[in-house]
Each structure stands twice: as structure tokens, then as C-alpha cells.
Amino acid sequence: MKITSVDVFPLKIRNGPVYLGTSIGQSDESDYYIRPEYRSIYSRNLETLLVKITTDSGIYGWGEALAPVGPEIAGEIIERLFKHFLIGQDPRDIDVIWSRLYDSMRERGYFTGFMVDALTAVDVALWDILGKSVQLPVYQLLGGAYRREIPAYVSGIPKQTREERIELALEWKAKGFTAIKLHLGFGVHEDAEIAAYMREALGPRFRLMVDAHWQYSVPEAIRLGRTLERLNIEFLEAPTAPEDIEGTAEITRALDIAIAIGEAKRTRYQFKDRLLKRAADIYQPDIGRTGISEARKIANLAEAFNIPIAPHLSVGQGICIAATLHLSAAISNLLIVEYQPTVMTAANSLLVRPLVCEQGRYLLPEGPGLGVDIDEEQLRKHMSA
Image (tube, one colour):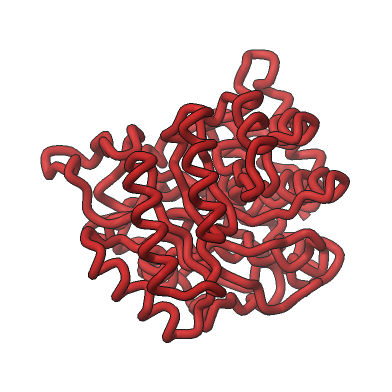
């Protein structure tokens, strides 16, 4: 079996749901704006990069790279640097292809960022092809499923007022969800206040997590963490700058609440540095940034340190979500998986058969490969929008 074509689809879903709700920084003048609450550049659209790799046997695979802004960038890397290498290769040589593409730019310093994002999309597509070629789901190729129902937490309560937040959270509780992550980072005092009234509204046994979006210094994060401990918050995510390994390790040592990090990292090498320093209690690789191959190696490394994995999912669409579920089924040290309700709706609009998350659990997609397929007619509509 040989690869005959590689097609990239930088996708921008216009007029889709705004990730994490509205922002005072949003403007109609550009697709992109800096969200003042979190400093990062956001898009008014849902953006992602899809790749379709086709073989001479007629089997094809879909891959996806997490690309919340500028999906064209990773697409150009595939088109200009990867495509000519991939044509003629056996797509089942997944590790060989990953290593050669990673090696091709590492000595120039491109061992993370958009380079690895592009590699991620290729990697996921190759696993899809491998599964289809032997008529087995990806989780089976990874060693089997520890679970076929994947525990999920609702990510974010994108409302502005206390009353609106409580109302929406209670709606999710009524639907059978037992865990919610609050997207905070508005200041130590305000974060503590929001967490306190959400705990009161949802009750003592409901699982609550907090994402601080890297907003705090080490002393601030420790002060916030001590307050969250009294509220029985399950974990504090991204408390300080992602580059600050020593600072994150200091926060982890100072607090009883679990510290969760990892969405910004892409390779086992980056996670190894943090594991060795015990710089977190929970690791959150995003399969849209690591791919399936690297995520499995990260999970195996973490297992050796008795560290659980809680995969990150933000604006990744259907292929990314499906890949995450297969990986999550096949690792022993899974904790829980993120669920973005508005993103899931958009993702399912592009799939032939929808993914399901209900009553606090994802259902594992069955069928060969990733068990999902892109509706190319719907895809073309978004491409031409």
C-alpha cells in the first residue's frame, strides 16, 4: 500500500459558536482579536486543519491538527514540506514516518509549534488508514479498550452573571453530568468567589475543576489554590506560565489540590522534563497537538510516575475528538476527558455519523479506523463560505 495523495483543508466555520462565550475584546473588523481576559489571540470563527491522505488501494484516512487560529500555516507545512516525502510511502509505517518528519526540522529548532501540529494531522490520518486496512478500530490497534464509555466533564459555563452561571450549571447537572470545569483567571478574589457560589449551588459531591489560563504568579496561584482546597475543587489547571517548570513544581508541592497542565505541549520530551520535576499531578495532552502516536508515549511515560491523563479538548472538530476517544479508551491511566458542548455541535455537522456525549460520558466510536467519516459535501460548503 502506498500513499498517492495528500489534501489539506484549512477550515473556518463562519458564524459558529464563539469559544468560551462572548468577549469584550471581540471586534467585527478582523477574524482575530486578542482576548484581554487571557492575552491569547482568538478567532471569531471555529478554525481547524483537516487532512485527507489517500492510498493506491482506495483506502483513505482523515487527520486533524488543533488550529484555533491560522489553520493555513500548518496546512502550508504539509503542502510544502511533508507532501512530497509522503507520496509513495507505506502509510502503515506510522512510527517511521513520524520520526523522519520530526527529524527533518528539529536541528533547525522546529521541534514544537506549527511544525508538530502539521505532523499531528498526518499521524492521525495514518492511524485511520491502518485501522481501515485491517478492519479494526484504532483503540484495538493501541492494545484494546479499558473502557467503551469515556467519562467527561463539561468545559466552561460561558455566562456573564452569577445567576446565569448557576442556571446553566444546574441544567448540565439535570442532564446527568457530574463534573464541570470553570474557566476563570479573572483575579484571585473573583475566581474564589465564583468557585464558592458554584460549589454551594451544585452541592458538595459534584466534581468541580478550575482553569486559571496561566494568569497567576507562583504566590498568587498558591493563595488561590488554598482557597479552592477548602471548596473541594478537584484540580487547578494552568495556574502559571507554561514555560515555568520550576514555578509550576513549586505550586504543586505547596498545595494539596491537584495541579493540571499540558495542553500547550506537544512531545514526550516536553512532558518528560515536567514529569522528572514533578511539576503537576495531572497531565492534559491535546491529541490535536500531539497526535495519537505521541500521546500514547506521553501516557506511558506518565503511567511510570503514577500520573493520570485528562486529555484536553478545545476547538478540535470531529476527527480530533474521535482520535482522543480512541486514545482515552486504550490507556490505563485515564482520569477524564474534556467536553465542549458548542464545539461538539459544530463537529457533528461535518460528520456522516455524529459522536455522542451524554449523561457525563462519551460513547466510543466503533468501526474500522477512527470510526468516523467527514461529510465532504458539508466540508465544501464551509470551504466556500
